Amino acid sequence: MQIDIDLLFSWGAVAKKYKKNEVIFQEDEIAHFYYQIIDGSVRMFNSNDEGKEFTQGLFCIGESFGEPPLFIDQPYPSKAICIQDSTIIKLSKDKFLKILDEYPVIQKAFLVLLANKIHSKSNTSKEIINQKPEFRILAFLNTHKRKSECNGSKVLIPYTRQEIANFTGLRVETVIRVFSKMNDCNKVDIINHKIFY
Amino acid sequence: MQIDIDLLFSWGAVAKKYKKNEVIFQEDEIAHFYYQIIDGSVRMFNSNDEGKEFTQGLFCIGESFGEPPLFIDQPYPSKAICIQDSTIIKLSKDKFLKILDEYPVIQKAFLVLLANKIHSKSNTSKEIINQKPEFRILAFLNTHKRKSECNGSKVLIPYTRQEIANFTGLRVETVIRVFSKMNDCNKVDIINHKIFY
DNA sequence: CGGTTCCTTGAGGATGATCAACGAGGGTGG
DNA sequence: CCACCCTCGTTGATCATCCTCAAGGAACCG
Image (cartoon, rainbow over all chains, first blue to last red; front, top):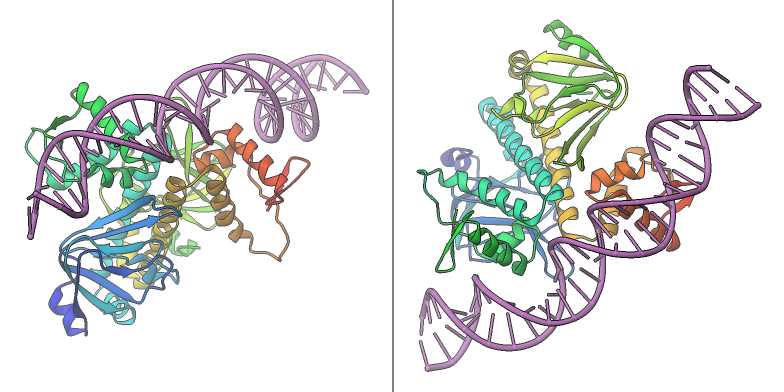
């Protein structure tokens, strides 16, 4: 949870409902609002000329997204859509910045949040540029396993191959073929088309 | 300039001299200091198994670098070295964080700084994943032209082809061949091996 | 049961990486 | 001043790999 919901409302925030696949903001749009998810989930991504996509981030209940452009006068670097029906709090940029001024603790929390984002983006670039498809996919699996911090055994990866392709910048077919190979080496288990890692 | 130098010194910072190519910190090292460049310049980059490199950032006089890990308990995602003889201010993590607490204005400035970094990293990922070599190189040229915000005419690109390869994740030979093609189309001018864009 | 969405496979082609060799320029020391 | 070395740029040939295109199968859901 980033900012207390009651606090947001007391500053004039409104909760808005979005349908699955509804666009929250477009790439290159100017940033006017702070967004925080009450319910549902959001995906930020770029698409190029002919539909190839790259996922910049996924955001779940309690998380905020699309904050960096609020601090600098820059447009959104990518598009955001809901991947489920969602309820999202919107607060105007001005008021958001005022909240930060008023509450140093919150400001500090955002510093940490942004630092984390930089860290994960640095890692993403590193892994994507240097490495072979299998490394990219392993990197993806590792970063997305932490969320479901678990026991020792293998864990279901709750993403389709297309989604993994979008995260890694590969093509679906390549992802599928790499997973087949990884299955042969027991690096992952594929049971009934589902991936365990 | 991030933090006033006298202020840094008054909090116990020390200025340290580094030789060209000297390592400031290693990848995966724990972050203990805030670094700000008084003179010289610094490169942060990753190298993989056999020497292929990816440049995460270049930093010049007055800029700070390697701050994100100070806010979160994470090691450095890449290595930093001086690309010239340099003088760099070091301040311990504890004192740096105290300065931020004491001076809200400075804290705000770091929020903006981090927001900018995220923005540029998002753009980098976007361009690198989706696009063909020429697009990656154009993206590089565009982001690195802004610094020398200039008149209308073409501008000398002060990077070697190897450096551009390291930024874009391509190989030198590929960079050279792409530039030749771009020269033929007048997208860049190559005069006496020097690139103008 | 029909329609999505997702997964899978194969064949073929394009392209960037790799390897090897050479040239040009600048700096240094004899 | 020349010889040498080192860095940078350049070129061609070959290779490995991922993408593309096309087709079909499996799972899921109303």
